[in-house]
Length: 236
Image: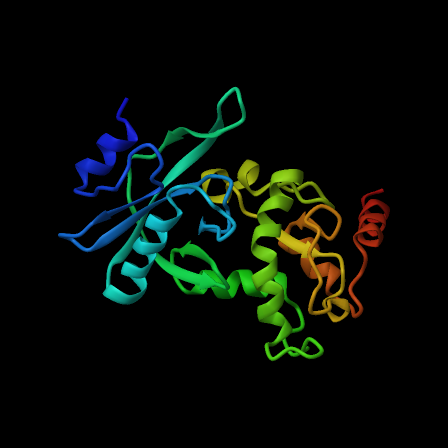
């Protein structure tokens, strides 16, 4: 089995320290490589809360992409843990994928194309014209910025089955549907204040696009419990 070091070196990239590096660079061909954990379905590659020893190097690599024309490539990793709870790579794909780097506040994401940003934004926000009191940004952007980490935590907790009807895209469509699900904010966006923190378990639920559309069919949006009742009634 090829090691991570062997794989990275085979594509001409290197790092400062193989024990703690999570990003790598090929200066000759001007590209940077980040590993993408399988749990980060939103494409998160650099969490600003991360304080590990590779932080400084990763930020240096990000600057190469932002300011010096380097390209971003990722390889997919499956999360594992040691007996004492430390994060380790369970396995990884020996394949590099070209991505676009997107910064949202101080976190960085790898998207396949810019439309990914628009799709997720549309998923999470249903009234983009509202403004937060005392803020200078639209609530659509503010809500999206807060929701990315919470979205991942929500899916980790509940999984990718629709919370209302149980539909699972992976079971129905195979690999193309793996990890796909909408995440619904149960707290109406109009009630969100500037300092509001999303609770990934109580405020968010994974639901399929059909149920998501039905929830927002009327205004104010139907509570999840109400749509569940309607689904049960029509099923019977």
